[in-house]
Amino acid sequence: MNTILMTTLTISGITGILALLLSVANRTIANYGEMKLTINDEKEYTVEGGDSLLSTLIEEEIFIPSACGGKGSCGYCKVKVTQGGGEILPTELGYVTPEEQREGIRLSCQLKVKTDLKIEIPEELFNVRQYDYTLSYMADVTDKIKHLRLRLPENATIDFKPGQYVQILTPVYKESDEEVYRAYSIASSPVNKNHIELLIGYVPEGICTTYIHKYLKEKDRLTIVGPFGDFYYRDTDREMIMVGIGTGMAPLLSILRYMRDQGIQRKGTFFFGARTREDLFLTEEIDEISRTLKDIEIVYTLSRPTPECHWEGPVGRVNDLLDKRLDDCSRLEAYLCGSPLMIDAVMEVFKKKDFPLEHIHYDKFE
Ligand SMILES: Cc1cc2nc3c(=O)[nH]c(=O)nc-3n(C[C@H](O)[C@H](O)[C@H](O)COP(=O)(O)OP(=O)(O)OC[C@H]3O[C@@H](n4cnc5c(N)ncnc54)[C@H](O)[C@@H]3O)c2cc1C
Ligand code: FES
Image (cartoon, rainbow, N blue to C red; front, side, top):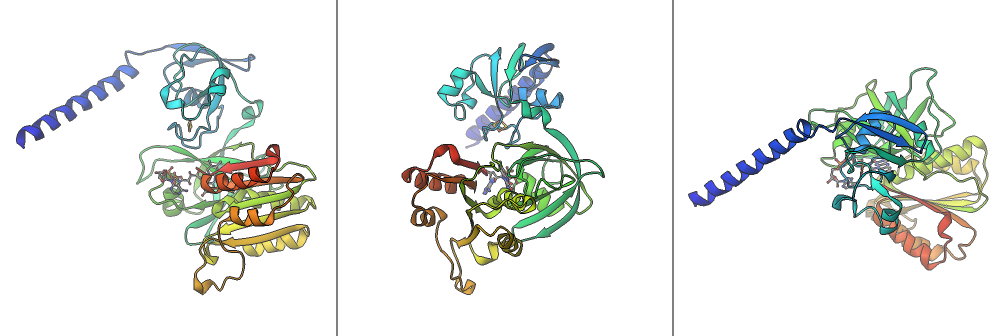
């Protein structure tokens, strides 16, 4: 027994020392020096080698989407590498399709800058900025979701499209010793450029949501980067199908508020799903919006209503509801937001009903 314990301790000790040596070597011996980073064949930067491409770009104040904070688990931080970069890494394979690999797409959080690099990124990413917001209002809208209003300094503004998201830079705090970025959809209308609103659900042991729910107080400052995302309102005359479950309704609320503010009258249905009646929120404002946007029907749907709910509306999963309600989809446009499970289930229904795929927009909260 003692021999087994000693062997285990020795192996753990050796592994620990090796890991430490590797990390020291990475920082000291592997001194890559200065590298040339060329973006979109026109902008050239001299950067310090050795760090991830994602962090190197942040140093240059170029912000690539990074919903998982650089852990290689969201697939959001893709860039096209046209020169340098070496072979794709095993940690990238799950997120970069074979076709993307042929085009040179890489996960910028996994690729280390060890040689000169040429990359291509969408021009709009040059407009992404880091903002210093102050929390001006925070309230519980359910027992697990907080509604935040964040204000920029006077005269400062942010431009975004309704439906886009920002990333909160969660600082080091009592329960986390690392700074992480997390993505949150903007719920407010872009008409007001001085503030944004967010709806943030609590995830047990989640780094950012624990900070927001347990530590953040009114008047605190919060660093936010954005806007990001190609999930945003399209100005077409197609009939809209909007589906938001839980906090997934946030970007759809932004779209509805924008349509109200701009007086845009379009035909559409907003399916707002939750578990129980208590999990539905901001319904007074949504009902008010639907009185202004007369052609928008609001459908509240519950997956697990309790007897106390006395719920008379639709019950069950939203994909089943859509399966029953949708007929000819050729003139429709869809906006879906929420868990990957819900979106995949709805996509199955859409495919079955020949929904035009180019008119489906979604954001998976993963
Ligand atoms: C484009 C985009 C927009 C988003 N918008 C919003 C938004 O408007 N409001 C909002 O509340 N969230 C939103 N999210 C989710 C958000 O970015 C975070 O993933 C979530 O808040 C958890 O962050 P965390 O740091 O607290 O948890 P983490 O520290 O990242 O996670 C801790 C653990 O919880 C697990 N976990 C993470 N999320 C969930 C979950 N939802 N349910 C169960 N387990 C989970 C993780 O796998 C991990 O094991 C969005 C995500 C994306 C990609
Ligand atoms: S930042 Fe999430 S995979 Fe790179």
